[in-house]
Image (tube, rainbow, N blue to C red; front, side, top):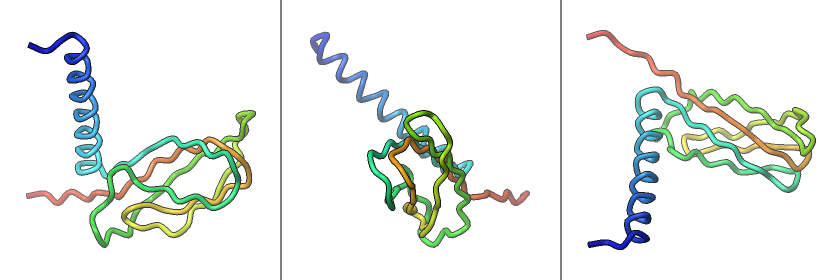
Length: 109
């Protein structure tokens, strides 16, 4: 029988796996990826999707919000989009949020 500490670790692992499964399901059915990342410097940053898109997918739409330390939207530039990630260029240390989606077209049966 597991101890309370071991049981807590088991529950935490189960919750983590469930979250990963939910994110994979959202990607599969709706085509969405999202994240929030903080950068301590300006420059070009490589951003990897938590759930990569299928090989060869190129029609990924990415929406970004980039905020400086005072909370002002300073913007950024997205480039080099692939099925596994993209590059983000920022002019200052920032917190960066994105949502990426691959438009899904449902074909009626």
